[in-house]
Image (cartoon, rainbow, N blue to C red; front, side, top):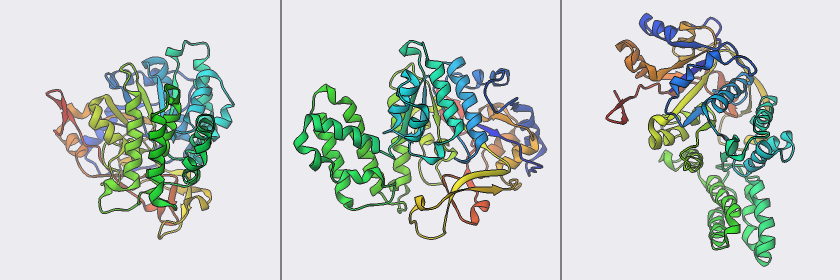
Length: 418
């Protein structure tokens, strides 16, 4: 695991001098957050990521410009200097092929395919610049040397409905209405919304998928989109709260995203950068209970998965504010600027800033040989600040998420607790 810490004003910490000294000594200072500069400061990543096939690029918020700029920079480095070939993103699996067609073949318009991903969080100048760079990198290269784009989130599946409608009108015109009638609600329903007819959605999506599987090989693309509808139907019909956290919509969503990454890794030559929130790329449970995308990947691939969380100090970020109380409609609230001051002394952000107030990376795997005090600190209980696309009105400033920096070491070819 690694962490990035941005500038945190006059942050202060409560860790021992021994821990602070180790963090300062092992910090990898960043000369810039933007692309187009020397990569000398990133060269240590080649040793850090030796043997790694999947790098999770996290972010503490979905609405911070500097995170997007910073993630673009290591993405270029991973692609151009380390042979990574796929960017898998917490974005619409349904609309992802349109972005991929643009970056690989120049099909369509960059701004339009980016908007098609459906998430307001990704409709930014920084992400537009990133997919335009991917297109520029691919131009003139053989297909097997091009970097690809994959959306891995079953949400926002309108493109899949459109493609399947067109496919069925050609192959089963008399059955289009019956096969898709109940599923069209998935174009606008969001996870956990539980629309009517609740019990039929998953059944009808699975029925469509089974029908297409009996079709000729030409149905391969349609089958992929039908699988997306099955997953989307599962997400919108699941509850947001359950006595078993693994039955919630949150657990299902991360599992589906991990499965999408796993399918890409069936090719042993593939190396993937996974773009998602810190809450997804972490190797520990989200909120202390829900299995995450990163946890699934680490369980399956061990140290071939590396989670790089991005932390921040003070400033502002954009998110929708929601009222306290029962979940209603998150899309009804406006996207606004939310301001926040420096982290308190118990937060990891402040402790990193005490050791090194500048922008830097710290490779926590290197702590296997660190003094006992450092290993004890890593294995302790920690909190960080993190905000998704939605934040609670008024109280968001006080939100702290439990975070695991737990040190893992390799023994006998497997990853275990020290």
